Length: 173
Ligand code: UDP
Ligand code: MG
Image (cartoon, rainbow, N blue to C red):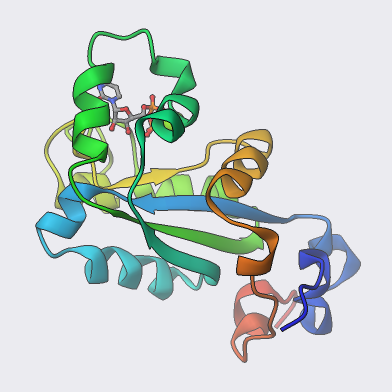
């Protein structure tokens, strides 16, 4: 399947105003979710929200990738245990696409510490602890671009029109 620039994938149902707000974000479903058999629950929360998945795979992270990915906290005392935890099982890596999706996904995921996260978020509802807080999600446009490249080749990102795009991404319907 040819790779199409992602700004074109929703074009049939979007006004120019919305097109400018389309973003992509990287989500990792972490080892505690796999161990606790909550991968489906996490995916279903994102699906119910109406997120459009454009890439997904299972991958086992190595220390180099994790040191890059968690560069901003690599000097912290908890970093070695975070790496050990993140390497304890494979993770599920996903790219979602949509309007203002980076902040929307962070909202659904909730605050870093599940005990401080708002009720209704994945972390508050399904977990109790850090580092095992179920999910990683990119926190900015810059981070999402770097993180998506870290985990996916361009050829692994799919462009397609979803029948529900008009409900989630259209304006004035
Ligand atoms: N983390 C931890 N202890 C802490 C802070 C963070 O184990 O005191 C872990 C936790 O798994 C968190 C990850 O490090 O999700 C990345 O931290 P960040 O501050 O980027 O939080 P996030 O963006 O995941 O909410
Ligand atoms: Mg972070």
